[in-house]
Image (tube, rainbow, N blue to C red; front, side, top):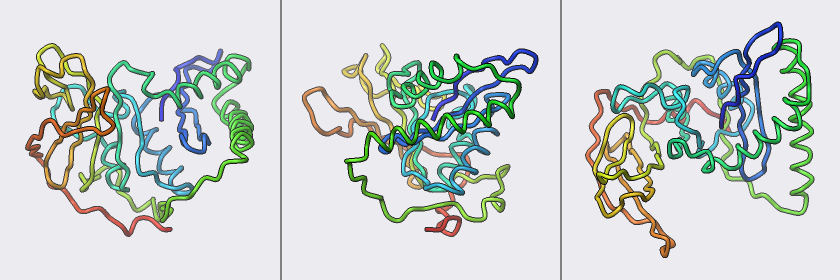
Length: 255
């Protein structure tokens, strides 16, 4: 998932477009907003997951509208809490590395060249209405390209029910996992949620995969060398939190 923009409609103002893609089926879902705000991200996901399957993983960049502030260590944003709450594991790519989000970046380029740069819009309602037609065309094309491929559905398919009952202002930290792809700096450290953690100078300039397990309050760091097929555990940290962790709720979704 990724934000594009802001861009400006003459006589109206700034508009940003939030895009989500299923990297297997290549189907996309998009919506436009007047700002890149976490409230808009959450509303977008609540609406989408109320009608479409909740994924196992959701990969994003390190924008504040996803990861939260850049000051407080070990803080989980409301976006991350929502994902944990519904059983989705967020994957944060390395900072300033859009090439790690190749699937959504390719769609963003398609969206820009085939729609946003070619059309003239009047206001938010106008672009929202016309973008739905663009998305339908894109998804139909994707389905046509995969017409000879059998995509197996993962069971159970989980969809939100009674989303209105979720208190978005008091989301707890739920038992689950959050992942971070991070470069190792010259001191052999990585930065995860505004905290520097030492993984070893032998990994300087390499990328590692760090996973926070909220239930066990642990963070494991994995590394895969170029000649290896499997990532290996290179460091394990105790990861105490200043808040309680609740069990995952299995009564908030339906199959």
